[in-house]
Image (tube, rainbow, N blue to C red):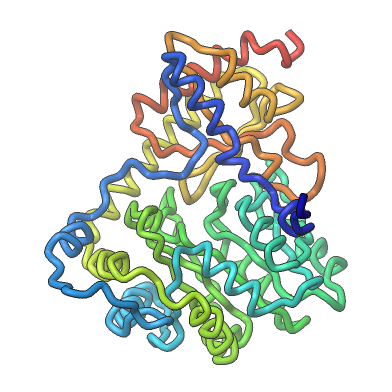
Length: 399
């Protein structure tokens, strides 16, 4: 039998999707599965985006430019300008989702065997992208006790070696919901300038901030023109996960030139999705005001309900729509599978994302889960009740 590659064998399974077969089996048995595991918003996609696709006048569905259409990139530049980020359309490259943008960035800034420092826990697919590119993730652990704030800069410096190429962060954070402060961004900026590294920020949740907080982009920080690379996406902002449109942004011309070569190798981003994404930029502010208000209410309800459950430790999100929870169990993977295979309450169970897959350090996060609060408030409240009942009877919690 032919042998698979070592790279393929090392590719990690998604902690978010690996439990899908168990969820499907539960539904076959007639159990309602309430999904707390995946960041698929239930908010309606802006009508402007859907209408643009319905009323298109294309007669040939052609390739677009490898860097994305001029019209869309110009409107993106205008959008960022409204958020105090001055860039040109030539400093934007449209990608097939934020995932492709992250892969392009890793390919641009590092060679096989090079290292990227990432505060953990982090978006699980960073591990997969790094494996695909032959890179090593060097984690800097943050703690639930500190609400997953940026670890002290003193913890970063000893990890920087001759093969370190970049520091990568997600702001606001997936899976933590942590919103980095301006001071934290400035501390990282000083560090990458000192060591001549790239600072890469995944800012796909930039709109989702709560309690009057505002997002501070690395593109707003002066002096990072050669160091800063941003990844963005329409998936969460406009509830358009299926569009698969993202972008890579940098003022560094060498980064953009190199990224374009990766983009040319995959030909072009999808044309219809760019049409929808361009139209989505016309979405009125009232849409975002309503969405932020809804997610803020969901977060508050989730926090209140989780705090009623004995033995839980919860980090309070300041952005995005995720929450990290430490459970009174030894193994969250086993608990998540048990929920789908053996448990139901009032005909329902919940599907959660075990958190070990969001860490690179072995052993961390084993008793933690990520909850995505992308359900309406009634279903969210029911889901937490199901979780509470499950913890009362779970045989692996020592009861």
